[in-house]
Length: 366
Image (cartoon, rainbow, N blue to C red; front, side, top):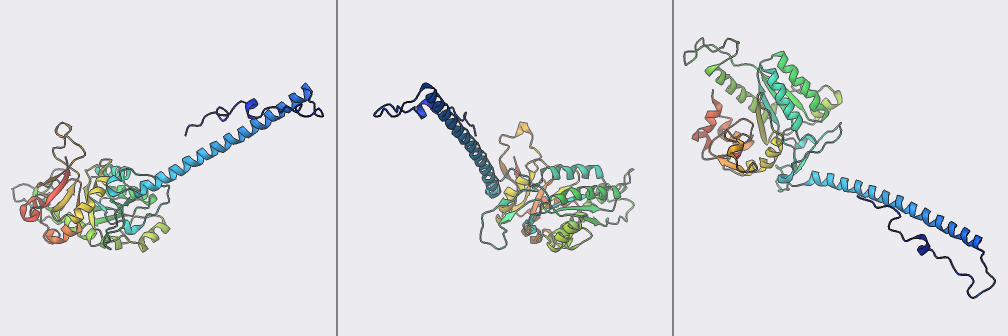
C-alpha cells in the first residue's frame, strides 16, 4: 500500500486554526505582537503533533491491512477448487497433515541404480505438494474425502537389498519426515532366474551382472505385481520395519495414524524425474479417473510431446495408447481384472492390449 506524506494532504496550519481577533466586541482583551506569536507557535506545534500521530496511525492501519490481506490470501489458497489449485505454499515444520487425506501414494520402483533413484527422489521432494491441501467439492459420498494430497505417502519399492540404494531412500526419508510425509521402503525378493539361455537364445545376464532381455522384463513385471498388491491392500502401512522414520514421536504418530487404503496410486520408476506441475496434474485428474468408467489410467507422458508438435501445452487428450512413464491407476481399475490377471512379463504392452483396455482411454497431455 502506497502511503502519501502524512502532512501532504493537510491544509496549511494558518487555515486549520486561524488566530482569533479578540479586539472585536471588547477592549478588555488586547494581544501584543509577542503574545500573538507565542500563541501561533503553540497552535502550530499542536497541529503538527496531531498530524504526526495520524500518520503513525495510518501506517499502522496500512501494515495491519497488508497482514490481513496476506492471511486472507493464504486462506483462499487453501480453499481454491481442485482445478485451480496449482501453487504450493510452505508451512514451517514441524507439520503433520491429516493422514486420512493421504489416499494417493506415490510408489517408486527401483533396483540397483542408486544415482537414478537419488535424482528421482530429489525431483519428487522439490515439487511435492508437501504443504498444500487441495479442497474438493463435497459430493456427499463418504468414500470421497473432503481434501486430498496427491503424492503422499512416499513408497520406495526396492528389488533386492543393495545397500547404496537403501541408503538413498533413508536419506530422503529424513527430508520428507520434516514435512510430515510418511516414507516407506519395501524390499522385494528378486524373482529367481533358473534358465541359462532365454527364450530368444540369449544369456539372461549381461556383462555387468544385471538381468537383460526377457528375464529382465519378467523380473520387473513380478516386482510391479508384488509392489502394487502391497500398496493397494494397505499391507505396507502396517509394516513397522518399512516405515523409515527416525524421530520417535513422529514414528509413533504415523504408527497410530496409518493412511487409508489408497483410492489410487501414482507410479514412477527410478529413472524418471518429474516436472514442476506433475502433482498438480495428478490432483486435477484424480476425480475424473475415479468417476469416468471409460478411463483406464492417467499418464503425465507423451511420446510426441515436443515443442514443435504441440499447439496447446495445457490441453489434455484421450488416447487409445498407454504411454506409461509417470502414471496413475485407480483402485477401481486395479480391482476390475488388472490386479488379478497381472502378466508374467511385458506388463506395459499387456495394458495396451484391447483385452485389458476394453475400449477405455488414457488421459495424457498434448
